[in-house]
Image (cartoon, rainbow, N blue to C red; front, side, top):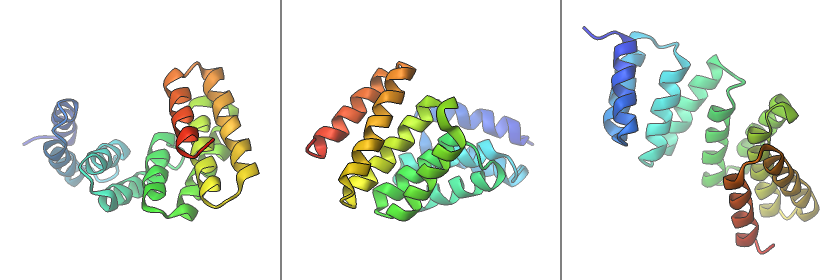
Length: 162
């Protein structure tokens, strides 16, 4: 009989090989053995997200966040899915939760949250507020030395006509 940790490790191997369906099955089995483990929900949520099962991913991220509310990667992934689905209010709430918790202590996640909230504000026509958020995202990404995030911010600005 496999323990939850063995099932999780097997899932991680499949995850690394980008076999998201197989990995999700392992994480599901691990959750049957230990339904309180945040990582099992998170990784299964990522698998669902990668296979286009957004509703299931949101459900797993929500379960993970109920166990670990300050997990920025989980909250960011859920916010991003809400944003993609057009649920701007739920996305904004998650981005603002990250900003409230992470602050300047974690420039990477704060930059991503400012970017997300800035995109929402653009969508809602709040141009001045959007510019403030997008500038904050850019400043934090630069402070963090995150060139990939800086490029993403530039891409988002270009798509938005800025």
